Structures are given as C-alpha cells and as structure tokens.
Image 1: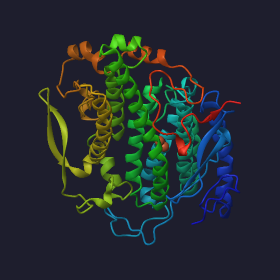
Image 2: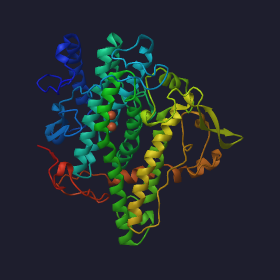
Image 3: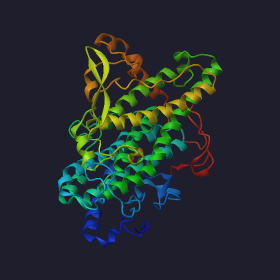
Length: 475
Ligand SMILES: [Fe+2]
Ligand SMILES: [Fe+2]
C-alpha cells in the first residue's frame, strides 16, 4: 500500500506505474472521461475556480485538503483503503476462507454486473444535476453541488479501475459503456430508474442527496463487506466521500424548512398560497417532494424477493449492512424475514426465506436510517413552535418495483382504488404546479454571503471558512 501519488497522470495509491498495460488502458480511458465531463458535467462552469476538497490520503484523519480548483483539472484518481491483514470472508458459503484478490471465475459475471450497476449511478447523478449550477441559491451551495459532482466522477473512476484491472476486455468495454449511457435518454438510459429521473430544482437536489445518495451509502456498505477484497477496499474509501453528499441533502432540506417556518411565524399563517406569495416553499410541497424521492429511492433496492440477492450473498459478493455486527450465523440458510404482500386488496405480510429477501433487509435498514433525519427536520419545525410534522410515507406507497408495483397505496398505507389515486395524487406527489412554483423561485445568487429568499443560511461554512467566503470564483 503506497501513499497517493500525485506525480502520475492518474493519481493513485495502487502502484499503477508498476502495471504498464493497466496504466496505458486507463490513460486511454482518461481523455474519454474528460470528454464526457466537458459534455455532461456542470453546465457552463468548467472555468470557475471552486473551493474543493481533494483526497490526499486514505487515512480517515486528515484525508483531504481544500483549495481552488477548476473542475476539469480536478485530480480524479484511484484510491483504495489499505488492506487488512489476513482478512477472511465472513458470510455466505465461503465463510472463513481468505478474501479474494482476484475475481473467482465462477463469480465473474455476477461481480461484473454488481460493479457496472454501481458504477453507472455515479455519472448518472452528475448528468441529472448538470443544470443546477445555473440556479444555485448561494456560492456556498454552488460549491457543495460541484463537490458532490466531482466526487461522483471519482466514484466512477473507482469502479472503472476494478473493471479495467480485473475484467479484461469485457471490463474495458463496460468502462466505455459507462461513458456512453445518458440519464433519461430513451435510447441508451442509465441502468436504474431513479437515475433517469430529472433533478430539476434545488429542493429536488437536496432530497436526492438525502435519499438517493443514502441508497448509495447502503449499497456501498453492503459491498464493503465483499469477499472480493479490491471491491471492499474501494467502496470503503467511497463511503468517506459519501458522507458529505448526505450532509448536503440533510442540511439543505433543513435550511429550506427553517426559512419556511420563519416566514410562517412572521406572517402567522400556514396557508400555502400566502407562503408562496412570500417566496418560500410551503411544508405540504416539501412533504410531496419527500414522498416522491423516498418512494423512488426505495425502489432502488430491487424486488422484495430476489434469487440474485440470495446468490450474491451466499457467494460472498455482497453482504448485509454492518454484516460484522450481526449476531446470527452469517449463512442464513434457515432464516426467515417478513415481506409485504397484497391479499384481497389489503396489505399484509408473510414470512419468506431471508436469503431471498436480502433486498428487503437492506431497504429496511435504509428506511430506519432515513427516518432519523426526517425526525431531525421535524425538530426544526418544533423549535419554531409550529404543530406541523413531516411524515415518512408507507413503504408500499408509489412503488414501481417488486410485489407492490401492482397496487395503489396511499402514504398512510391504505390500499386505494384507481379513482382515489387519481383524485388524491396531487396531494401526495409533486404536481406540475408544485414543480413550476419551485422552479419559479430558482435564480442564481452569486454575492458572497447572500442566500436566496427561500432558504436559510447554514450555521457554519466549509472547512471553517466564513459563510461569506468566495466559495466559487467565476473569472
Ligand atoms: Fe457516488
Ligand atoms: Fe454520492
């Protein structure tokens, strides 16, 4: 394990210079990546100086430094956590065997699929967010957007490195295909549904980074358990970066709520019309955005029963969240888990083999984690002395994947008929009018220390800089 070498064309801590064929292959991919970044990265922002953090070490203490960087000059590279001595596979049929440094032939197709699916989400989110810089509510927020974007670009590098190093020619072809698919493109879309949705405004961006980047956290945590050691080590380092993305989402929504509550108290009203006229986002609209992003994101975990999930686990490719902290046998052969089902138009649940329900297990872990932050948002409303509370919609609400895809379920968990769904949908999910209203608030604020009217300033700046620091310089 070496320190990160910034003298190389591709910064890395994997001794890339010692593997000339791999180095050449990645140096060949690099200009294609930069071409993709120029075309699909942040719109009109390539020349800005952005106060970004760059990884300088994989040591959790002091792993990054901060400074002005033009985004196309960001040092994307390959950083893996240090190997653990004598690491063993700790779940599934290979439990107790040493971890693999090379891909076992029998698991090659599944591992490639896992890596490609994860890799595809990374550039997708950059594409989804590429127009947001034009309407940032402050320089602080603009910088955070760009930080998330460059790190998603680096996460693509993390997966492409594995494809190039361990999957030969098919890996190189997959790495090219990762640059060819486009979010929302009907001919060549990104692999997963939520990554083809638009992220049209900043409320959507904060919800996306709160919920959908958190899906990323749970997927990465499950892969960090993998018996394929290079995948475990690279995803561990990605998790270090991921924490900031979820912070951007949680604090962003929190600041929107804080500002709305402030105006509700000033005007002594909860009337959405009056609040909208005052230029802030009413809490019911925030709730509808929450319902949308939550439901679309929990679909990302896949079907509630899945033989693939069982195979990935038993083969030692993908563990559970915090696998090592669980007290069971880590084989799960006789274990059961409850999943939802619909019988005679009513929601119930049934017991199924846990191995087949591992998508649901991960989804439920995600749900617990995301509920905690919604509780913190409600504290903001409570502190403002207001009675309203945001709710987590029922797990079966607005689902497109798995058993629940075929039923209409209200946010409170009631199964409803088509007529009620059609009549109430506008109360449950953002309507075109909601989106048009939120869009009407979006306008670029570029004066250091100023914030758009619809969002409160953050309590502190980035890296101990003041809030009115010039986080982006436009040149
Ligand atoms: Fe990522
Ligand atoms: Fe992320």
